[in-house]
Image (cartoon, rainbow, N blue to C red):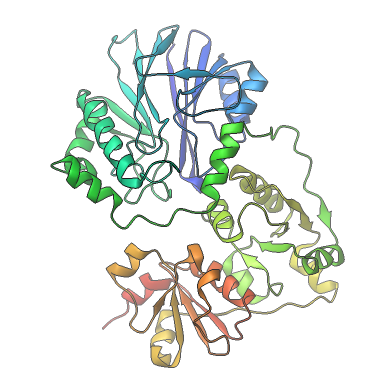
Length: 453
């Protein structure tokens, strides 16, 4: 029996795959916590013997090293990756077969130098591939960002990407199914669809980047207005090049008394509040950073806090604290000393200080008048350019903390984003910087845009 399964990790917009036949399986682009593949393989009667990385991922820490250690599987990776662990370095045309499954590799540099794609054939159906796993080379509706190699310029990478797409992927039949490593929300592209699979034919017709009429036009298209590359990307690449330590046997998250947590905060640790923004607004620990567990938690935590800070978690309950720690580890944040016992209630019972965050609806913001406020838009440049509230200043969340020097901390400051998630994060950053009166806009620019004119 031929098995082909996609696993989608919503919080990282990350897709991974398990392919199996005749008792043997290969896993492609595994997330860091690998039990999901081991459990699925056991349920299907499969033994994982191969782990394949389409490239050295920059936005998350891969589980390839642990999965290989726990199964004895061979890791396959593009020959130009310079990986520092035991692996098979694959080149264009290489491949292997197990049972009725045949895999063939295509070298497709552009997103990264070592990027590969994988042609998948079910030999019971046909020797021809029915699918291609495209990693971050080709997304649904987009292509990979070409700025992740330190020794190549974005234009050089974009030219390589054009050749990879047009000489390799777009020579495949229209019916071949496309399965990428990311979907909408990932920082590895700009216009990714929420769809999790497509076909070469549909992408040829609908993907904006593939409609470029020349290499020159393509290079200009995909390098213009590239979003800022998060600082943690290069660190995750190196973690993946080395092979990340195993998460298996990760001990329970220690519970810290409020007094212990307060002492750690005074010594420089960051209290990361993972509760919903409404709860954070009602009351929170001064100078804490809020990143709600419900959204793209780990990505924004890595962008705003980085990988090297000492962290204490404040969560809704113990399971949420453990989930927070796991998600942080998925992007390489491991310096988590514990979670606050009793949550905010325990903190208050210990008579430690809390502060509120004012929250207003878009209607109230309009009645206040933007001229009387210091209004900050924390969305990305493309969102700002598509429309923004008159009088606002643009301070993208990616580097908000470093861009507040030209604002007045004594002036009433209102923060908005698209829907309210990022602005809550932004408000915590602004409060931590010492601004006296900070206000979050519930519903963000979407709510503002829907107001009657």
